[in-house]
Length: 382
Image (cartoon, rainbow, N blue to C red):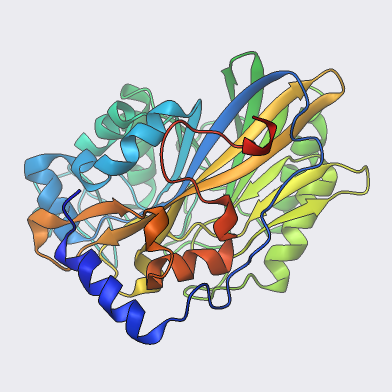
């Protein structure tokens, strides 16, 4: 495949300053019952969909899917695909939260980027067409178009048949979780955020650390674990641009896993943080991905452009549901070659000397990388 100038630059730069697999984790992440027989599914999880204005400009002509086209085959082959939707999709709502005439294009007024994001409603349908099943709306940018923006976002996602979790409409009394049924498995999702940039005037958000919400999360997990096959918790947490999780993240992750969750898949820091296993007191092997970084964005450092599609395999056995393995598709965001060239670029097995691959392998072992279809999360069982 023809290489972009951005990837060529990364290759040259990394050869000059990065030693092979420096600081990388070398031992693969594996699970003790990886080859157990039963009904299996694969969850594909991605980080922040963070649409700065050059990405929105390209999408206005080529569609949002053009940004992640190389990832789409993996997304579609997975049974469930998840990402964090970092910002509202609020048609015709300005920064003050008022309904105005809709421009139907990126205009720096209705559809905007940092510090207050708002995305064109075409995004919801492009997510659906790309194979996304569910997104988290629980993040610090959720109220960038105030309470009405949350309501509009939910309506637009519902109309596109994209599931969402983490917020609810003004005045609504809905469960804090969503359940997805796939291939005979019921997977519950709970999403929460550490904080928001704007006030939650209508109490629409689920918070990870506030006592009332945290109690509700733990209680809900305790109830759900006997009604579903697996529980995924998706917190928006941690310190931006820090590659290691903090003690508050670790404590919360351990609490929800001990209560009965199967995996924790985090977001917010805009860089990858470590992926690790955790064995609960009842001897369940669980997984924590503290941050998947950015999926797509215009942030320019190697750390903020390095990303993965995390592939989590689940098998429903006669003794319960277990994680059968974890793999990832390594990718890098190309966003410095002009607006029309913005896209995700997959990394190959020959790219393991690159700065981007080095960044990824500090969070998750290189041995767990997957460079081509089909998706297999437990290759040791083949």
